[in-house]
Amino acid sequence: MKLTLGKAKELNKDAVTKEHLIIHSLNVCYAMEGMAKHFGADPDHWMGVGYLHDFDYEKYPEEHLQHTQDELLALGVDEEDVRAIMSHGYGLCTDVKPETDLEKSLFTVDELTGIIQACARMRPNGITDLKVKSFMKKFKDKKFAAKCNRQVILDGCEMLGMELSEVAGICIDGMRPHAEEIGLAGTTEE
Image 1 (spheres, rainbow, N blue to C red):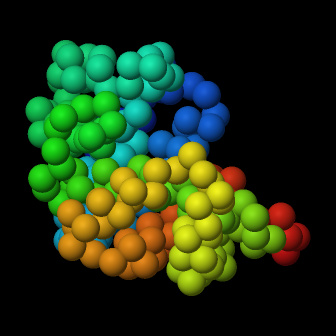
Image 2 (image 1 turned 135 degrees about the vertical axis):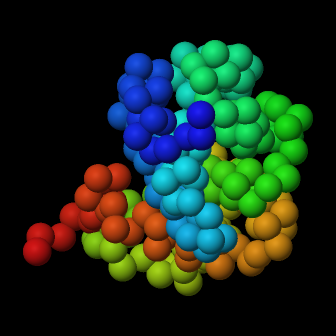
């Protein structure tokens, strides 16, 4: 079965229960929606893959993606979608190299959304008025959101054949309409 956001949420509801992990899943999901639109692909499908990408992380943080493939295949998830999910750990915890636009996008936006989230949290208006220029400034500061792997993001952009600023813009635009849900609407009162 090809993933949809609805199906991914159903599969993830017992696997991902910690709020920060749910927020991360949503961030990646909405960034993937933007990437799907950029590539002329099915947003609902890409959002589903993005939402489900950390399926085993809460249960096996030290063995991330080592339990994903068999479990998701057993649950009836399409082999291509499982492969896409596995590929986001390429060079880190899997040897599944991202090959399709879907896989390359997931590989790139997983870490990228962490820096976008950190940038937005520092702003009074959150992500609602975050500009790519502000993101780029923070990206260059290695001490800012230091846990986010910048090399993975740059490698992913290279795989996609896109500039970092373009990918960041697409992801910010994808996440922005969902600012309230992902806790990035800012702190200013309307």
